[in-house]
Length: 114
Length: 113
Image (cartoon, rainbow over the protein chains, first blue to last red):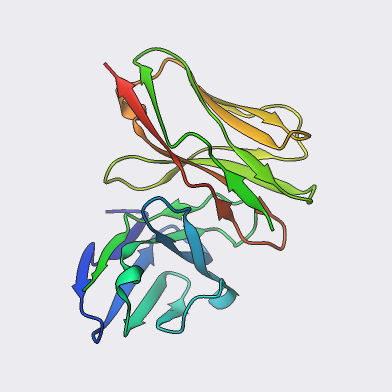
């Protein structure tokens, strides 16, 4: 799979578990994004990294912790989640975090919190 | 706060016909971009078309075109000669400089054979 990959594709976890979502882009981009996609709600931007620096935190609860060790990899560390956190989590990348850049999305991780 | 509204949760169109998906947005900015993204079932979201607010000419990409009415804050997507592969969720998005990208709730498009 080329472009933007995400692992795992599906994840079921209990509220006391700790897990991590991984995103990798093979496009040479410098900006990476985490989105939450819930049913019947707009896609919600969670975090933005531009050249490995976090430039956007859209009031996301601290139980979600992002990490961007380099421009190609992005992680979302999860702990003590709530059932309402169940959603599709999408990763995206773009050349830079500017308005005119197209974002390239990964296939998403379907998260279920029990 | 900026908002993006897609008033049609679902639409259906006969194969080979033309369909228009609507999108309106609210902003006080003058410099921004508008996007239509497509999310096919169980497949990755991809960009369909984008429009810079400063450009009066409507963007076109093959069978996809937009009707951008800046004063009315309207950004509709027209799909001509609809094909089965056009079946997907379509998201309208707005992104202004020094602001975050905002998506609408999406319109699910069904193509009837």
